[in-house]
Length: 314
Image (cartoon, rainbow, N blue to C red; front, side, top):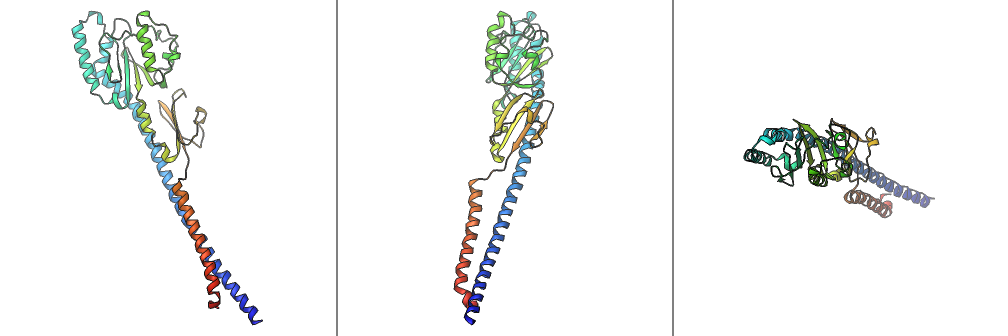
């Protein structure tokens, strides 16, 4: 009977030691994992907020830079040069004014970071037009383009439909527009250059302005979407997508603008929609796995110790 009681105590002490080890290690696993996950989620939310704020600020800046570029172009004298009647101006005067304009615009950083080129088009064949593309200016009188006919006195066509908004230029939408044969070659060249680019149209002081957004600018802005496993989409004021980036594999469409699970920011020129997901890296899995392995090893060690020292404790 006494031996049976000793065996019972021995068994109970073993169970108690194992129970203490299991409880303490389970508590350690839960608290460590919870603390780690809480820190990761908090960091993720902070990064998510910071990146969305950064995206919004940079896109707002782009819209401001459109106005700034117009201001720089106007101050350079380019708008006046394109709106003046060139019939009564001598070639020397035109070249002198043009070289001054070229110098002013070349020294502007706006045309490097935010814009990769632009066209300034006079209204009719008696007014000058010029273009800047790939840091190269057309020479005065070289560009045989004017907008009077292809804007068609504000008739509804691809030019007027896309007026004053950011959009992806598709030359197929512009090939059926009637233009004079005298400007046909330069018109087709312009369509080829603009095709696939993000552009902005505006009419300023009787000069039709086409700004080409530097694609590297947007790629730089959204280069770190992988940090929070994000997807982003930018729609213009007509709800048309003109830029998207995805690291999460999620495709955002115009129908998602009012979706509560997406972060949406709307300005006069665009609507930015972003979504992101918490992702676990190999380090996260290794860390949490290591904690589980260590705690399991301690429990096995406790079982081993319980077998050896249970009798001594009795």
